[in-house]
Every structure is written in structure tokens, then in C-alpha cells.
Length: 147
Length: 147
Image 1 (cartoon, rainbow over the protein chains, first blue to last red):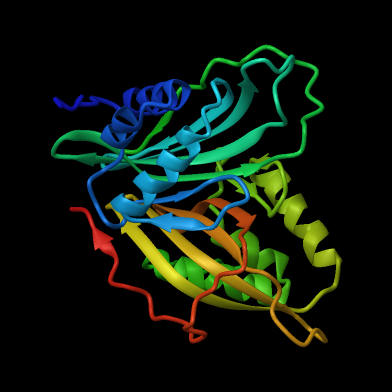
Image 2 (image 1 turned 90 degrees about the vertical axis):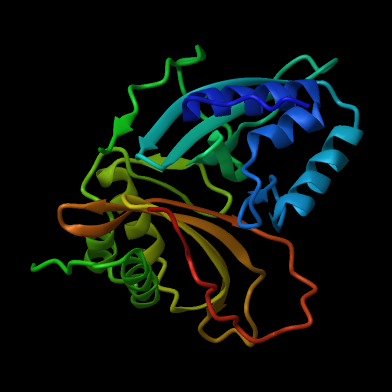
């Protein structure tokens, strides 16, 4: 399989949520760096480290067969030359459910590798429902760039 | 107050957990970057962004008056020139309780600023108790350095 090359951390993030939406394991793992230092914390979960265990964790999630839709809000980035840290609220809708589930707050970390930007960490945890009066997704603010 | 200058992200992390242990709000905020893009996710909490709200969240926690002791395990770092991402299991013991509470998994992000390394993100979430047969704290592995 020809792997995509992500020119920016935003491209890698878009591919991550697209793979999640499609339950596409190969596309998901193409987003992650091929490195034993990668790690993933699924909501309410323990830390899963390394390519094999991260892959297996997504395989189990995708095997559940749920079709998910993600709406991302309140994106906030700290962008370095080699590493980029994104924070985002995920509002997840499960197919056949009338309304989104409670939000998940995620920290996504991307690394600039020889093969483009890749995910090295995903830390997600359930967050209390917000009391925001603004139900519209917000545009991402300009990332803070550190050069 | 003269603020400490942290030469490495490890120094900043040590100061973070020392401030937590001592419930020292000024020392805690001296670890954080003075930047509105900082954010903190306390266990089971929402994201708190910006210096004022992060400070207020720690003030409330420290006002609880609990004396906490932290044992850190399974540290794992991705170290860049300007950003450093640390992942760690926190085993928290509350004074007068006989044994540590269930672990918390934390992602800690540090930024190299003009005033040394500072924390820009702390994302903590409760993790299931591990079944590790190794009760001893592990030494941090050598950080992966990206230059």
C-alpha cells in the first residue's frame, strides 16, 4: 500500500479522523509514526505503547462495527519545527443515535519525520458536557508557530 | 518572586510534581509558560485554558488541603528542540490513606521559552489499575531526541 505523506500536522490530523470515521485500520496506522515510542490513551483506558499494541487497540475498536461521526471543536495548537501538539474537543455521534455523546477532550501529538508528519501520541478522555451557549463548531485559531 | 529557570524539560517536570506535592501555587505557576495557549485537563475534567483559568484550577485543588505524594512510573518522552512531550503514570497517595489510589496517566508538554523550559499542557486521566508484576518504579528510559 502506498502511504500518504502528510505535509503538515493538520493534514495528519485530518487523515486520523477520516480513518476513525471509516474504521479503516490501514489508513489509521498510516497516520502513526512507525516507532515504538508512539502511544495511545483511549477514553477511560490505560496507555497503549508501540506500533503493534496501538494497532491492536484500533483493530478492536473498529471490530465493534459502530459507524462514528466526529465533529471537532475548540481546536488549539502549539506548533514547533519537529513536534506539534493539538488539543481538540471531539463530539462523537454514533450512527442511529439521535444526538452526539458527551464530548471527549483529546491531545494529539505529531512528529515531523522523514516521511512527513505522523502521529506519535493520542490521549483522549471523557469531558463533562460543556455549558457553551455557542453550539456551532469554531474555526481553528491560527496555530502558534515556534521557529 | 524570582522565578526558577529550568534548563531541561525534566527539570520543569520535577518542579511540577514538587509544586503538586507541596500544594505551592506560586511554584506551580512558575512551571507553566506565561501564555494564553497553555491548557490543563485534570482527571475527569474539562479542558482549562489560559494562565488565569489554569491558576484558578490549581488554587481550587490546593484549597482542598490534601497532602499528596506522587510516585511516577513508566516515563516515556519524545524530545524535540523546542517542544518535549512526556508521558507518565502517576501513583498518588493521599496522606492518611494506606495505599495509592488507582493510577492516573498524564501527558505533559513542555516548551523551550526565552525563560527556560515551561509546561504548556498537562492532560491527566484515570487509568485502570495495571496488572504489572513489577511494583518498583522504573527509571525513565532515555528520551528520544529529535535534532
